[in-house]
Each structure stands twice: as structure tokens, then as C-alpha cells.
Image (cartoon, rainbow, N blue to C red):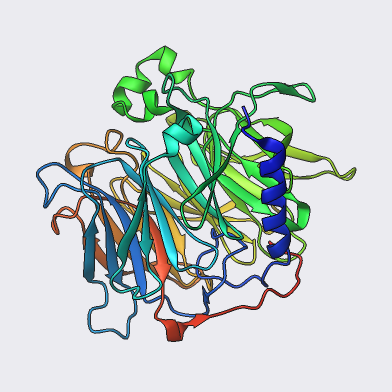
Length: 442
């Protein structure tokens, strides 16, 4: 399943070695790649929202929406720019390049990747490139996660061009948009655990030479109405139930973990020495911890429930705090945001919850943990109907004990569409260019 794996591995290893000394942990969002530079030191100025077009609403196109997020600004909490890409490709996730000057955004349906210049003038991004060769180059479709490597972009996919099922893989492009390599998700058995070939998120820990991937479902599921999927026993069997540990330098899978119930977003603890990662399973509503045991072998362990798993609250996005001692979890079906104390990651404890919407999906927090942003849309055909079909970005202040509303943008009222993924930028004066000094990494 790997194309040019040895040569590509050499290329990847060389690029990683140039950036293996990772900047000290300072960033605007806690989910960003450790290879990113030009990171926000303090207050973010803008929130960019990758938004699904809705037929008959505004121009009906997918778009990058920019919102002023600086309380000192006269346009605080307002939409200041909207850049349409033409058509509806199921806009989903985004990721910065390592130099933080460009934002890559993908469509789960059309597999197009739009590259926005957010470095020249973050208040008014420009569409500078659209990459259309992903299916032809890789055989994969549904680009989901965009994760910066030195001079490269690592892309985690959800599906394939052959049967639109969940068997998929990873791709690497350089920052210019040129294809570099593809890697199939393992379907073979490694150390007694069989891979399912499914993919979703990617996250890495350079200090441990570790790349983790998770798994979800293919185009045949995520482009169907959610009610249809739930009522189709065959479709419900077509969700991933594994995570894979890869050798980051060679891009070879080394371990497979059984993590039933579609493990989604992966977050590595960011404080020095905390070399563990956590994820949430959508269908079983569990938190899973991935860490090394006393003998140095990596293990995946169910460490707690999110809400009442019997009610299938459907945990979607998670955000770890910068000190690794807390975790925000959004559950889509009940529109609830929960905070877990991770002081002991083996025993997460829910200490706070708030209903943040009729439906809620993505969460992004500032590095200091004092500001949180939430968006509502999951997938065009999975979003709720009727009154609960709220389409918003909601900003809150967090004082350690309570979320207090800051501002809200109603995307339906503004005729913008369905807001999904968020990324922060700042004016050049508000950014810190960090030297690549040695550290333990995330």
C-alpha cells in the first residue's frame, strides 16, 4: 500500500531531522503541530472558520469566514471577511503549514484542497492554490487532517476512490502543493492485532519518534443521512475500531491498538515529559489513554466514560489544556461541553459541564485557556433538523469555574452556511517567531 516507501521515508526522515528540535511549548491553539513557527504569543486577533455551503443560503458555496476576535477592536465579534471557493465539497478541517503563512483546507466530498494565504494579511485571506490531484495521486479521498511537518503537509484521509469505504491512508505533500508520498493504513496483523485500514486523525510526538492515527468511516457512511446510517446494521459495522502507532522517521506502522467505537481526535499532552495521548470514541463514548508502560511498550487503555454511553451522546471534538491537566470534550447529540480534570490521566474526572447549543461540534481554546470557541456543524447530512439545527460560532471566557458568553455569530442569519473547523491568526505584531531551540517536545 505504500508508494515509493523507502525513498519517501528517506525524504520524510530528512525533513523531520531538520525540525526534530522542536520549539518550546508555546502556541495559540493546543492542537497545532509542534513543528509550527510564528506562533501567537498572546491574544488572537482573528478566528477563521471553514464553512460548508448551504444551497439557497447566500452564494451557497463553501467558504473561509474570518471573525474579529480581539476585544480591543471596534469590530470585535463581527464577520470581517468571507472568501468563497465555489461549489460545495463538504468543507471540514484545516491546518497551517509549518511557517504558519498558509492554511490548507479540505473537502470530504470533492477531495479538493484549498490553500489560503493567511500570512500576508490575516484579516483578508487569499485563495492562492487549489490541489485537485489527491485521488489520482494516492487512490484516497476525503482529506480530513492537515498536520504540518518541516516543509511538508501530512494529510490523514477517510476513504478511497475504489469503493468509497473506510480503508484509506496518509499522504504527504510539500508546502508548494507537490505530491511526495502515500502510505496505506495497515490492514495486516501486527503483534497479534489486525488492522482495519481505517483512518481519521493524525498527531505526533517528535520526542518519542511517534505518530498516532485514529479511525472513523468512509464516504459511504459520512455522506449519508445520519438516521439512515444508524438504522442500517451493515453501515454501523463500517466504522473504525483501531489506532496505529507509526515510526515517525520511517513512516512504518509498528503497533496497532484495538480501540472500539471510532476513536476520533488525538491530543498529545504538551507539557515536557508528559508523553501520553488521549482520544475519545464516538460510538462508545469513552476516553482512551495511549502511553508507554513500565517496560517502554505503548498501550491503549479505556480510562473513563463521557456522559452516559447508553444514550450515545456522540463525543466529537476534544481540546487538551496547555499544561495537560484538563480536557474539553464536546458531545454532539446532547449539545453539551464537558471539562475533565486530567491531573491523573489514568483517572479523568468530569468537573464541569454546560449545554452550549442544540448541537455542538468543534472546540478551540487559546493557549492560556481563558478563551474558548465552539462551532456547531458536524457533517451536512448529520446535522440535526428543526430548532436544534443551530449554526453558530460561540465564544466564551473561562475563569476556571464557569464559561461566560463573549460573543456569537449566527451563520444562518448571516447567510454564511454551516461552520465547522476553526483556526486563529494574529496581526504580525502579535506573533512570536520562535527559534527552533531544543526541548523535549510535546
